[in-house]
Amino acid sequence: MLGKLLRYEFKSIGRLFLPLYLLSILLAVANRFTSYNPKWEYELPEFILMFAFMAILMGLALITFIQCVLRFKRNLLGDEGYLMMTLPVERMDLILSKLIAAVAWTIIGGLVGLMSLFILMPTNDIKIMGELFIDIFRYGGFNGVMFLVYMILIGILGVAAVYTPIYTALSLGHISNKNKMLASFGWYFVNSIAVNILSSGLVLTIEKVQLWDMLRIDISGTVVSHLIFLGIITILLIYNAAHLLITNYVLKNKLNLE
Image (cartoon, rainbow, N blue to C red):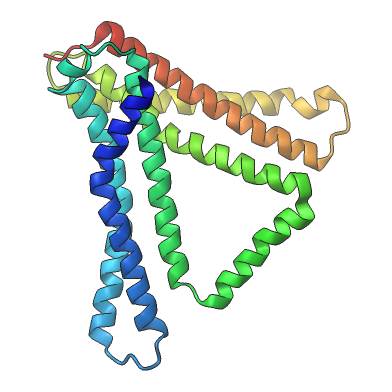
C-alpha cells in the first residue's frame, strides 16, 4: 500500500514542481547564452533574465518546503484527514509516504538547482570540478567511495530531519480543540529546546568522559573519520525515528480533526 500512496504523492506534487524545474533549466541556458556570447550587447534583457533565474531558484526551494509541509497538514490533519484516516492503511504508511515524497522532491529540487548553476559556470570550472571528483575515487579508493556513500546518507537523513519535527509539532498541535496552528508552533519551539538540551548534554558527556582516552587504543585517522560519519548517521536515524514514532502515536490515538 505504501507504494500506491507514494505514486499518488509523486503525481500530485510533480504537477507543480516539474514545470518549475524545466523553467529553471531553460532560464539557466538563456543566461549562459547572454553571459558568454560576445555578440550579445543588450544589458536590460540580460539583467531581466538573470533576475528571473535567481528568483525562480530561490523560490523553488521555498515552494518545495512549503508545499511538502502543507500536503502533510491538509491531507492528514485537515478536511481531507477524515477520508485518509478511513483508508485501510497503517498510519505510519501515510506518514512515510508524505516524508519520502518530501525528501525526494527536496533533493530533486536541489539537484536541479545545482544543474542550473553548473550550466551557468564557465567550462573550465566545470572541468576542474569533474577532475576533482575523479581524483577522489582514483586516489581515495574504498575511502573515496565510502565518503560519497556517507554524504548521500547524511544528506537524505538530514533533509528528513527538517520535516519530521514539523510533522510531529503539527500532529501534537492538532490535539488541541482551539488555536491548533499556534499550539503547533509552541510544540515545535518546545521540541527545539529539548533537542538542543540533549545535544549539549551529549557533547558535554563525551568531553567529560574523554572517550578516546578511556578506550586507550591507537586509532588511525581513517577509522576515526568512519566512526564520526557512522555516529552522525546513527544520531540522525534516532532523531527521525523518534519523531516518526511520536507522530504515528498521535495520529493513531490522539488526533482531533474537529
